[in-house]
Image 1 (cartoon, protein in one colour):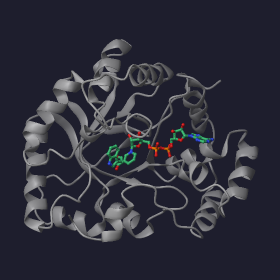
Image 2 (cartoon, helix red, strand yellow; image 1 turned 120 degrees about the vertical axis):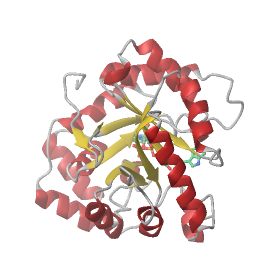
Image 3 (cartoon, protein in one colour; image 1 turned 90 degrees about the vertical axis):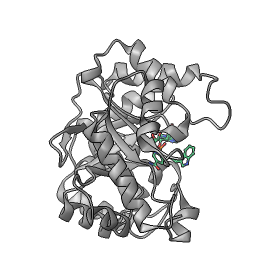
Length: 296
Ligand SMILES: NC(=O)C1=CN([C@@H]2O[C@H](COP(=O)(O)OP(=O)(O)OC[C@H]3O[C@@H](n4cnc5c(N)ncnc54)[C@H](O)[C@@H]3O)[C@@H](O)[C@H]2O)C=CC1
Ligand SMILES: O=CCc1c[nH]c2ccccc12
């Protein structure tokens, strides 16, 4: 069984900080629709299990309403704060970002986050407002409450708006990324501008895309490397220098995912998977917003 002794590689960000390339998410599987103050013990326990297994990159967000669970798990894990990489994201409380992060840090019971993200660009129709919000993100970084700042679900036009006025460019853009949603133009833009990519929904080809054109290749690669098709998907991200953020409430699955650290895909295998995956298009999150194709 893969465990904490299987090292998770780090990716260097454009601000000098490093991010572990496999993260555990407290969103899907855990987000609350109801009363935030009612703590979800299963979320706390699963997050502690993840930390115990060696997931030191933990992905949260204000909108998930699970920041208190994440903070409780961190506190109870016994792992030193500086060994962890903690992300949270702002939305919907974006009017006053310094106030939003203060609230998040209180729930997380920590003094700073490693990474603070604007969760999505869909909060304003105005370019000036997008730029003003990034200036607030820069303030947050300057105050030391976030080591790195970035965005999520941004397209090149949204990034361009920020790059026009920023002093500190986004360190990372967290996007939905899997064989059936490869964003070649966005990735090229990230590389040109030195912005790292993080993938959410990395297992989508397996969890939502079964029966798709990548099935056979994923099965063959899984057999070759003695892992599961999902673990091939995680490795496919990492081998393209893309941070993978996954999750599960099942300890066995969290443990199995770590087998993605035990092999590497060849450049040709990556190319074949890219080609097979590009025959299908699947978006699992924020579809209505991307379909609307505007800022709001
Ligand atoms: N920035 C954003 O807008 C978003 C961020 N996220 C972040 O990314 C994290 C991970 O997102 P996911 O889409 O859940 O990641 P994912 O694509 O890795 O899927 C994980 C899910 O797949 C299930 N799974 C794994 N193997 C399976 C199998 N063989 N058969 C069936 N189900 C299987 C797991 O139990 C878990 O529920 C979230 O918790 C959140 O932190 C997620 C969505 C949007
Ligand atoms: O971040 C993940 C996807 C997402 C978008 N809106 C919500 C609201 C509550 C939980 C997750 C999400």
